[in-house]
Length: 108
Image (cartoon, rainbow, N blue to C red):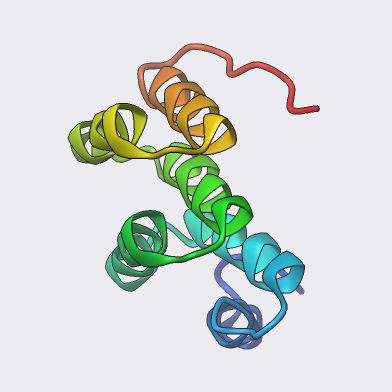
């Protein structure tokens, strides 16, 4: 079986969240949100705040929405206020909506 509780899946997602290619890293970073572990949330926080690539920061915001952890809302609000990328700000807003129980918009 393959899923968020599978140790091999978890290992692969964490490994790919450090990948040199932005598109691969972004996909893995968003997937971290489905793992919902403390370690995954910490990695999402680092990616949202420190990754140089806006696509990865955006993926981190989306991933945070998947965690179900409302304590991430202040960090997402800070991204909305501070990040220069429209895509990151939009993803953070949608993540907040998801965390508050609203259905997030469909990504384009």
